[in-house]
Image 1 (spheres, rainbow, N blue to C red):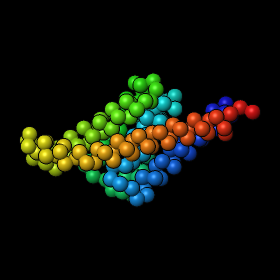
Image 2 (cartoon, helix red, strand yellow):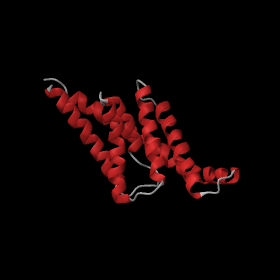
Image 3 (cartoon, rainbow, N blue to C red):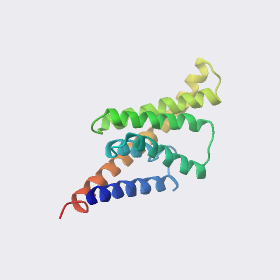
Image 4 (tube, rainbow, N blue to C red):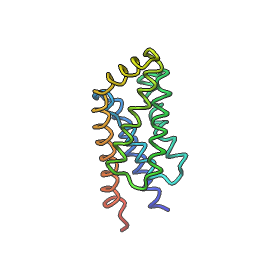
Length: 163
């Protein structure tokens, strides 16, 4: 039981550090939330906790960064990414890539519905203008997911190793 508490504290500490990085200057869309969603889905047994944790992290930082209608689509995207994390038994590069694409599609669908003409031309323009942001999304998702999983693995093999 003591080891489980230590492991949970390590998981939470890594997530807190990742969330804090969202408040530091960074390139647009280079953010930790996809990594947090996949990490929480893989590490927490309680699925509701794993689903709500990245959304809570997002909401708390959005209170500082700003809230708007687009947040509904962003939160929906991260909810779907958490569900993807539950469905995949092991997080692989393909899982992160699919998560990035999922975020791109859902969030930009919201941008189109809220800010562009509701036409094929509006949809095309919206998604075309969003392509440069996808690079940062993908790089951030890969980086944060790798750092969270690698850091946990390293800490588990050192700090959490039974005596």
